[in-house]
Length: 460
Image (tube, rainbow, N blue to C red):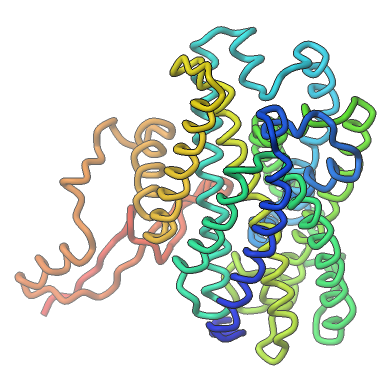
């Protein structure tokens, strides 16, 4: 699968219209954000409908188009259940922890305030740093995913779509905070649910005549001991990883404190659990369907391989709208989370007591975050990936290599090795990258030669 499904101009116009629509909605409600309490926790007066909408929209992102289907291909039904349950189960955990923290600290705005009060500054600084780091990485991943998807479907340069989305979203977050984000999330949630149902209809009904939808097929539902254990291992890893990270998501805690009362909070979390689990589970099943039908695609594009059609422009626009709503709802939540953490703890780090100074610091932090995110998207994540995987991963976490092994000044790129080899009459035969699949605990070939690679030669 490759090639354009819609024209570049159509994609550009589409991205502009969608981004400006949510900019208008967010900006309109920004006018009603008159104080810091409204900016951070929407005056603690959000009802069931809006709270459910913002919980669902902010919990889902464009990652559901790629992650769950890929997990299904690698880990089967267990991975799908683990991924879906891990994403949704945070809502159940927040019923218990949310009610408890609202009672202990009724004026709270973040989890980190509790950590600072209960565990001291050292633990607080560690948790705060990890939360900011996670939020920023998530932001970069979301913007990268949507930009790459738009590029794949239309050929539109990734920097153009990334710039449009980031500028529009940060504009209304800067002025409206959580109050504006909740309003845009509500609209996005309605769109996400309706578009999801339509796409499900397309796969199950319209495409059923040329797709094998037998999910009980022996190639998918493997009940032997080895397959079951492998599938359950995948599911458990996904469940723990996703549920744990989401529990520390500042966006979730803002919404916990924004609820009008405990009854509203519990009802919204339970409804959100059902919606989130259903959507993520069904998206995972698309990976199983793609695998069953033996379609030729990269694993990341499993969902698109069973639904995209160059002769059906409508479905292409529906998918883009679905992805855009998923992405923008996540991006505004992440930016708002970074902003709120900066404001809440500006007095702890910089002794800023005036609200105007706290807000100024937050604005500067957001603008810097957006600019760095844009640069990372522009350079396709390679520098960040190099640092995270090669240095932190290989040296400090996995202990594969002695600390200090990676030195950029000593790193040779494939073209540098080839250039030197040619001097000794060696012709390049093949260059291949390698990546480590943490779930499979095994190395696999890859097209990415930014970190780990091998070059073979033939002697003249």
